[in-house]
Image 1 (cartoon, one colour):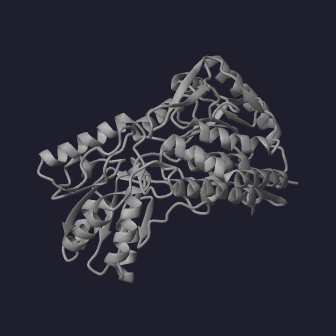
Image 2 (cartoon, rainbow, N blue to C red):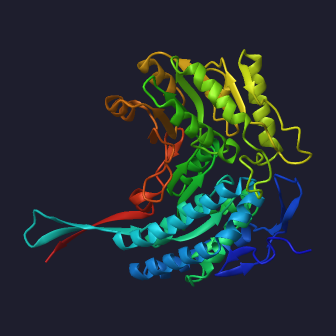
Length: 480
């Protein structure tokens, strides 16, 4: 029987390849049925790919930057022409609504467009020396072979944010996507294939983490690793990278606060908060988890939030009428249920939701859930929820709410609604997060850096910062 993966596979040596170690099934979060089986890589294949990537790096890194830019634009053109196919694959594997999948693929295209242009702007500089007839030359060079590990929740955008800047810098890439969403990477790599990159420049390996991860981390050929994943995995990867002193970029978890001040626009806040909280069923690292509402607006905000949340239509993401799809798997739904139960046992009030959606016979659906009377110590406040849980509390004082917002060990994103310019400047300075949105949740764009502080990671993806992380700086002194 034909499946959605049949024309793809592993991508090695510039071509699609069959398994070297077997196959793994990929399941639909809507039907719980197998979408298809994909081939997997073993340790021996991974080691071969590392060698091929190093050989390709010697070619690709010497390719003129204008030619690299042309190739990346060609990738973006191909991606644009296959938007419908890609969005459908995103929905099938993640369950997210089709409109969200279309926007994600568009963001992925943007990454290749942006970095196609940035490839032409890898600037150095000249500094005068104290030595007669001499000068300092500072240049930027690609780091070498790069390994990228991505999560399932944004299977196109996360891949593009790593692969596009790496290629623009002149690096070769080995990608290990999530086993839950390999098909999206396959479509993207088929677009890369259309650009006729040197064989081995881009490589896609699916399979058991240790069969791919261990050879990569042990290899001195791989000079940088980039992860989007959990803080726990990131900490282990940093430890393992130390043996060969690899560069690391870590985009890890979040636990974003959202603060509505007394002078904030409550209508705009409600519109933005509900959309941001329940996008991708809350499985978004930058989504707001902790809602701090000024006591002046608290009652109205809770009522408005609950009203909007209960009107969200759950269903198959391929249905254009769907507002929210399922969670990715049963484990995610179990984890959400445990957090909600812990909060209720500790005194939280359930305003809506609080359990699986009974109207579905299959699928990992969970109702949009709103909790009030929550304390900062409850798991729904203290940890990343990564699900459709909105924990709402009140405050009366700016200094105290900033302190509460900053109490989390995570520091990826933070949000606030206010109309006071002076307060905006204080928020920008005092909120401890890598990204701060004021009266807005639109933080992700190709042209700006994305990343966090504290336990949310290190390094940035996007913008000129995203390109810099794939470059080494070299100083040369000339004396003639």
